[in-house]
Image 1 (cartoon, rainbow, N blue to C red):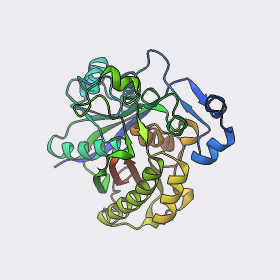
Image 2 (image 1 turned 60 degrees about the vertical axis):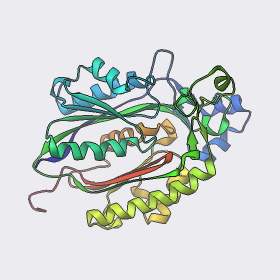
Image 3 (image 1 turned 45 degrees about the vertical axis):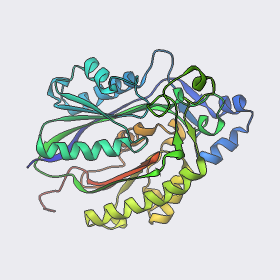
Image 4 (image 1 turned 90 degrees about the vertical axis):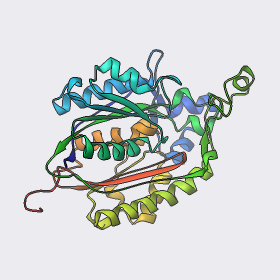
Length: 331
């Protein structure tokens, strides 16, 4: 039975920068209030012609190049997204074609937990089929938010992040946890466009195809569920919170991140954030942050790191990794 390691990573963000000043003027609010409320100073939004799939392709190429592999080497492509290219077929089909991936392709949708769900799924797949996997988290929520919705409009950013997973003799994964509480579907939802409410002129005229957020519901559940999943994963991994060199949470809102850190006993200096520059990029936030954390030297060989996400539904997922796997001395 083969183990899983991460051998490539990359990101792609649009070059269009949307500042707090721009949104403050649009929504007639104070610029400093935006940053104090969510910790975001600017975010990236797609331009005409840029899509969920095009960002995924760019991030995937970057990760493949870093891993020293080509698309022909990839046995399975997994795309985590809640803003698909179109209702059908899956976004992964477009990405597979553009990249030229030789193997299978499928989507995962757990909203902002999508990358964590995809990572655990890839880990399980690696156990039964030890060949390279390309996992991409990609979202363009700027296109699904109501242009008049201040609460969601100040939060969302667009982007994609990717990792290449390959088999290895040493397992990087020490523990993980996934879960969902489907009674909280109202926390963030776009009600029009599926079988429950097929698209219609009337529904679109009412704006029911746009995503709508219940901020208080998200905040309370995100903190509660994230603290719980962190504790379960630490127990599964057999490590203490003090052993973690770095925690990379979903980049949703700085107040949520700070509250999670406080309640879970995480050292704030060991919690990586970059949402001040990108906003909430949903499924892309953790792999984008991972790419930057490694690039900034925040993760070193042998470090214990935790990846942790939550999303609408509500969903959650976390994983503890030893970067580089167990050393011979540790083994």
